[in-house]
Image 1 (cartoon, helix red, strand yellow):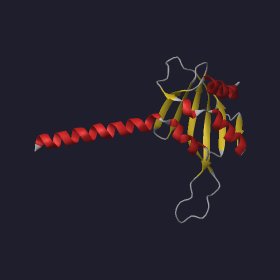
Image 2: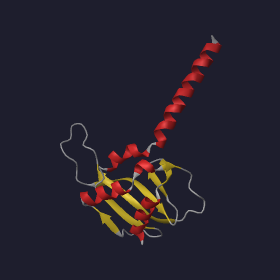
Image 3: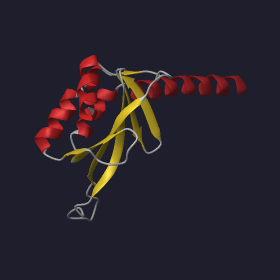
Image 4: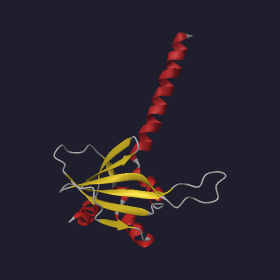
Length: 147
């Protein structure tokens, strides 16, 4: 009986581990969620001042398209990475059951840190932090916001 229980637990752990691994590496699934963004604040490194804010839906849509998230690869950030700036993404809260409208206030959703001279970005959400190697064109597009 104990052997059967151990085999079942091992099989469960194996299959659960495979499922978790598949979810964490496919960032392109989040591009639809990004389309809900209503404001992107551009903040250069070593400052807290907002240099530019994207609020027009066409500008945000172009920005998200330029990210080319289908080609991002989950990687470890090189130790020599130096931040060039951060994008802060905000949107209104989701209307919950029993509510007819939002309060109109924008709330921080996540941030994306860009790095100088390397094609990497780090996404930071509440308790989650993931680093990706991005296409060179995407890295160039992002760092131009901070020049």
